[in-house]
Image 1 (tube, rainbow, N blue to C red):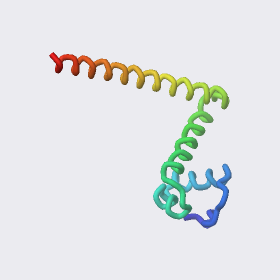
Image 2: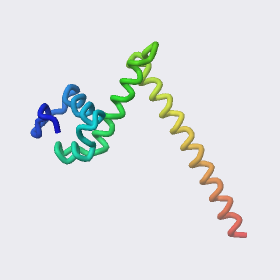
Image 3: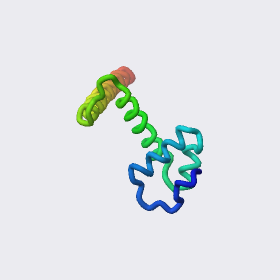
Image 4: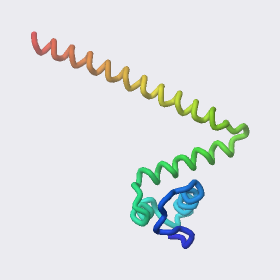
Length: 105
């Protein structure tokens, strides 16, 4: 771990999160090591890494999206995924009802 990271961090500011994510990207530490060192869940740290990747991708675009556009796009993607999941769930329920009806005959 880097000397710049303090093991007794109480509040994770954007600057501290950035420093940790950069160390992970540079291979100076791993998510598992950081998780143990700072008593954070691996999923929380992985979320920070994913957020950083999205931010980098957007900043390197020829026409970067503003924050509102990013959230609207993310919301739209999530709504589409939710809709697809609901359709699949309904189809499975109907299929199961047909199987149950066929078993009763």
